[in-house]
Image (cartoon, rainbow, N blue to C red; front, side):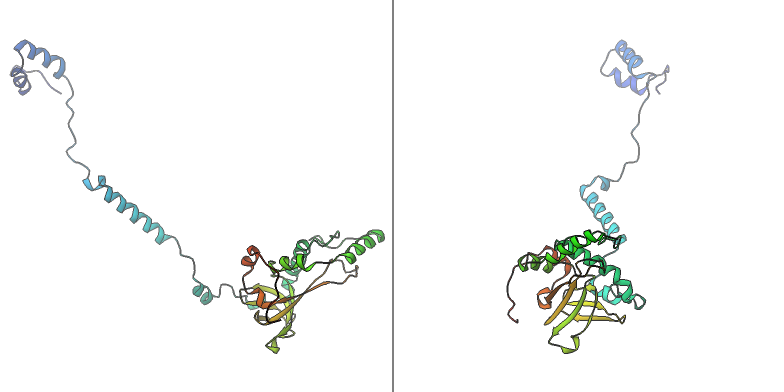
Length: 254
């Protein structure tokens, strides 16, 4: 703060150059004396922080550090080497996948609009009166599927859990293989057999047969729906089939 003194200060000398002695005293007393004198900081921030190019560089470096911390997804080769999709030997049991097969049967009956019977859901079969049983049996016996309707539905269906058997193939050793589908890849079906063996069956030049029970009630005797699938026409993954528009045509190799 400025202090009074009998000796003229530098400020008074500077004011005296432009003002009269009375004006110099008045200005000094009103505007300078006992007023705080603010000083600018002696240190300044580095000029690089205010540089737009430096800021962009800092953002790029921060983004690169975040990417390094984020794990990259595994490649297809790494998944094969790590056996990500392999089924462990202790889980290759036919009984494990019977529940999946029951869920798949309900799924197919739903997309084919099969008449429902109480107990065909996850709760299991229910006791029905004779009148109700006859009514449901008559509805199931009258039910049939049209190729124009069922074909596109099955062509876009998911076959994980389907009970499937090989009926024709250019490789005769594949004929007779049957079991539950546990993996549906682009070119193969992986099937768990009743002998608890995992079989990989190529789709190419192979005909598969699937049976869909119309009801889960074993006391109702109706014939199952039977379909045969040309494996060469299913050489795509299940998610791709679900979004693909199917058209009716006759394969050349039939």
